[in-house]
Length: 83
Image 1 (cartoon, one colour):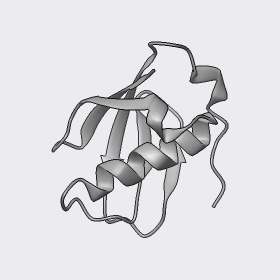
Image 2 (cartoon, helix red, strand yellow):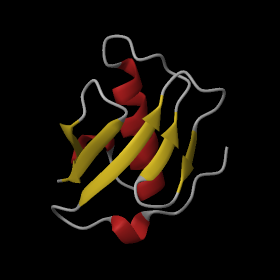
Image 3 (cartoon, helix red, strand yellow):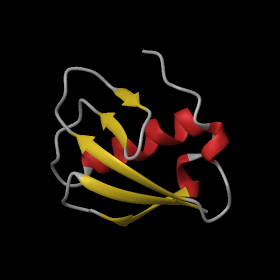
Image 4 (cartoon, one colour):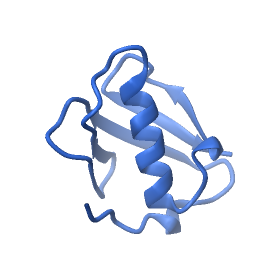
């Protein structure tokens, strides 16, 4: 799995719009606005949200704890903030 280098997007307080696809065949990120993210995790009990947060943090080169989900807990369209 090859992730794009999104480290240029890391700024304190930056908000990232994401279009999520849970239960996909693979974990992947496609650059754009919004970022497209596919994760293999199902959308049960927030497992997909956690998988998205971890994958996004890995592509950004930061710890997952620095990403906060602001909007879209149960939606495909999400917004994360870099803390």
